[in-house]
Figure (cartoon, rainbow, N blue to C red):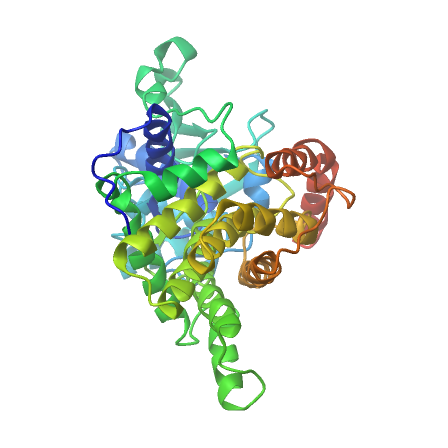
Length: 436
């Protein structure tokens, strides 16, 4: 590839770097229950006494995304166990890896707290889509910690009725330093950044491949989740599937999600606050890069194109919604795979438009083992969209929500998620709560 060390750094690229470093970070376990575990861990540290009871509250969206997912290392699903082990063994400095140091004894103690009905959970009636709150109690003493808008963003700490920390607008300098803006950005800007930025500027994205591929290898053992990856692998030997590039993309992507949702004690590299989105944006790129025997630089650029495109698309969506964001992350993967196989923006934009014409509107009915099904479906759609784009075939502006311009298609998808699916989200949660 051409030498890029002399290229002048575009100021917009610095904004992209800020976005990727904020949105592509390691997390151990599904990020919604982990957010509650973090609130409980911080509260327990400040209580500095044995935690006797926990009162937890979460937003409706966080409730939906936390009810059915296995908390790493515990073999148990749901938000109750997340709050309990977070309070008893969570690392308050661990952020999204808050449960990384859990011991078997702490897990047993957390399950005992739940069995003794000492952990309570309810829905918080707050305007925040993403909100978690933990109140840990010892006798008459208590500490309450609230997290809102981002999985690790502490907005309030209260001790025995006294507010000791509040993240008010005029007091958010540290938070603002992490903020980025994608106003006015176009898909072509993301593309140019990924293929032209100096390699040393973007090489950190390589860690996404390392973490998520490790998860995939664990998932292929067939010990976690719905065993989708391992099942497909067996079916290759049974002659029910061919060992093709298409099958490898599906199998290895699903396996990583199997492991992540099934409670494997390995971190995932996330995208836009979700491990499944990070997996969806990573694994297809790894598989295709290996197929074409891409060198290290090419892999890094394809990963950056995928992850940054996924961030750009997800920026048009609510933080949590009724739309399954594995689909939008897979649109990033479609971009990265297209570039690996052909190497031009037109093919990339056609692949994204094809995906919007195909899987827009898949619902998110909460984080669970079945997320691996949606991740594999999205990976399927991504590769199909790429194959069409390679032939110059795309969904046209005369069909559905797809527009002639890829950025308008992405904007239309965002409108669907933000405005058209809000009632759907409420209905999904009501159905899920009736089952409990």
